[in-house]
Length: 149
Image 1 (tube, rainbow, N blue to C red):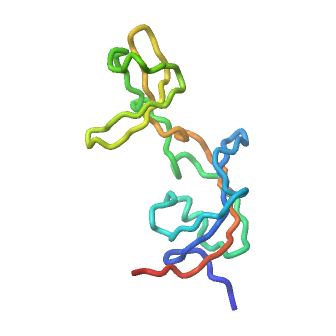
Image 2: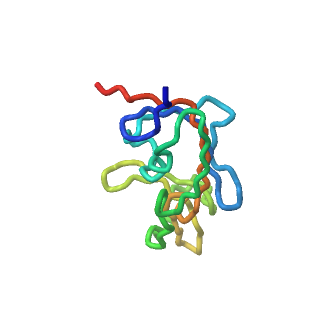
C-alpha cells in the first residue's frame, strides 16, 4: 500500500530544524520528540507547509525559504523612536534587550532595543528572523489523515 503524501487534510509528525544563512541553527527538535500538526491549522507558516506537500513518511527535505515565504523582509518603518522616559528606571536598557510592549488591542508585542542615543531609544518591532533566508530541514516521521470533529 502506498504511503500517504502530505497535503491538505493530513496530520504530519516530523523532526525539523531552522538555520540562518551562515549555518547557525536557530531551532531544532532533531534531538527530542517530533512535532505533530494538521496542515492548515496555523502551527506552521503557509509556505513552509506547502514546501512539505508530496513528502511521505520516511522522506527527508531541505528547503531554502526566502524572507517573503516566512518572516518577511526587514521593514525600517518597524523601528520606532521612543523617549528614554517611557521606560521604567529599573530596566537595564541595552541594545539587544527584548522588551514586552502592549499594542493597541492590549496584546503583547515584543520589541528589541536597537540603539540608545542620548534620551532616545530605538526599538525594532520586526520579527527577529525578518530579512533572513531560512534553511528548513525536515524528516517526516508519519503522515495520517487528519481527524476532523
